[in-house]
Length: 273
Image 1 (tube, helix red, strand yellow):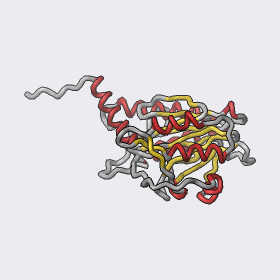
Image 2 (tube, helix red, strand yellow):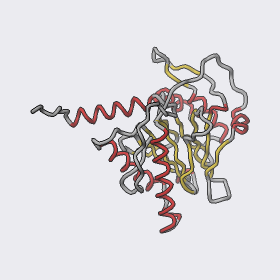
Image 3 (cartoon, one colour):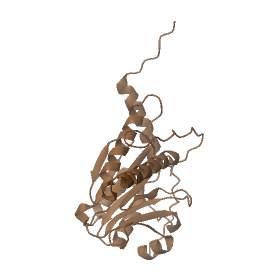
């Protein structure tokens, strides 16, 4: 009788974490920046059909990087949870913190399960408040860890390079155009083979940008910024000869408080945004 192959729990978790991190790092970065009137979410996205940034509820937005079919499952589960909670109780009972906790349970359960691969995703859950101090921004990783961010945050791609640029150039209480310029400039930073940062200008048509705007009079505070307005807000930008990036990304879905969602089908190709 053959002996079963043994892998220590520590090595198994390390291998699963390395697998998830490698997949996420191949995606394009996403940045979240707080500005005077709300929260800005921006990323490079060459797809015109698949969104990385979406509305979850009146004052709550969802953004993700990684494998599209996985984070789309997460988004749908979050919308269902928010709708059911708002309908059964009160719309004020739907909070970004509650959704972030539900996502953390889901991602943590999937990561520690030996029956399926870990989700290759990182996500933002953002909620707008009546004042800048009341804004909430949560960053969740592939293993269910939750971080309460302030000012700005980065997920996916060349995380360290983009975060370093934001750390140097972020200004608290900036206007929308100022926050957008800093966010887009940060997204244009990437590391070359020598570990040095490179600058490039991302075409407006390849940018996906949305805001949670507290100045909107309607209850729904989420709004997408169209390419024409992005171009107007950015103004003149220096040309570059650097080629456009060709990286990829990844996300996930079910467990804990979330309604059950069928696991994503196994696919042969990479579907990272």
